[in-house]
Amino acid sequence: MEILSHRGCWKLQSEKNTFEAFDKSFSLGFGTETDIRDLDGELVISHDMPVKESTILTVKDFFSIYKKHNLDLPLALNIKSDGLQESLLKCLNEYQITNYFVFDMSVPDTLGYLRSEIAFFTRESEYEKKPSFYDEANGLWLDEFKSHWIDFSTLKTHADCKKQICIVSPDLHKRPYHSEWEDYKRWDKQLKESKIMLCTDYPEEAEKFFNED
Image (cartoon, rainbow, N blue to C red):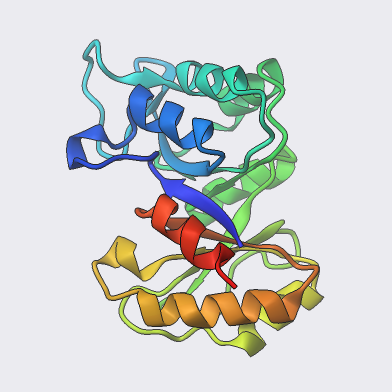
């Protein structure tokens, strides 16, 4: 299981999507999920609608932190605004970012990422039972909002189709997660060659849990 921190490694809510959170995540060897929007013509890191302030990180700031650690860790880039393809592709190329995927775009906006040959994941959840652009997508972002619907058959089907897989840990939805982690751990071992990613608010706990025999 490959662990991705959710908006970096943090303890307080105010630390999410900050320099310190990302720097800690990468220093501990975790990839990360973060949110991308645009502000005054520049790509920025922000989950909510951004306002102009000195503390907001730009995407270039974020990529600079990532490259400083010289590790090829996975980046899950949650696209929060339409029409960012050209600017994002330019940044990805400038910083030579290769281990990444974008996700959560609107269906029309996804077409732009497909045409730009930007790696993207499609979504599957109890609300999105038939993922859009399945054949074209590099992988699946699997989300369990209210129930534990993911099973081994689901993972194996996607793995057999050569799709990468990233599971959203239930803790992101304020649900108990330990019993579901037990399932993920067992299924991850059964799939063997197909590496599964897990996005969680508790990356250090997850790293210890999934590495225990």
